[in-house]
Length: 183
Image (cartoon, rainbow, N blue to C red; front, side, top):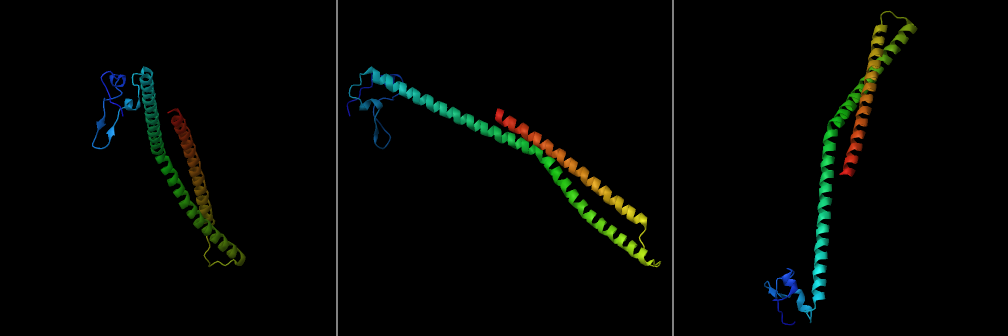
């Protein structure tokens, strides 16, 4: 290595070199000018400064792009969290309606079995015309039939509500996706 003179060095004047050889407890760290034989070459200094400026700008652009990407990711996560919070209650409502439909279907099975039982007893009684047997009244059959119809109507109304809630959730999802794209 040649003897370094940092007094008139353009790199140290422009702030690209701290001047001289540095040592931080290990091997010496030489400045960029240590490898040049004719350091008075002004073009080399300008090229070095230009390359350092380009590298600094590239680093700044990468950092800005990464920062923007992180901000977009955080924004999407926030939108998703808001979307999930907004749709949590409708989804719970759908779950409750489906549970009610399940319970009603069990009741329907029980009522239909009871109706079938009453109808079979009536048929047997009509065939044998025995007066001292248990004979379900037509009122009982009508009541059971009405209960079955009511439960079926109730289940239909629950299904309509479920479909309305699903449409609402789909609309919210479209809004979420649109907002996520627009940033």
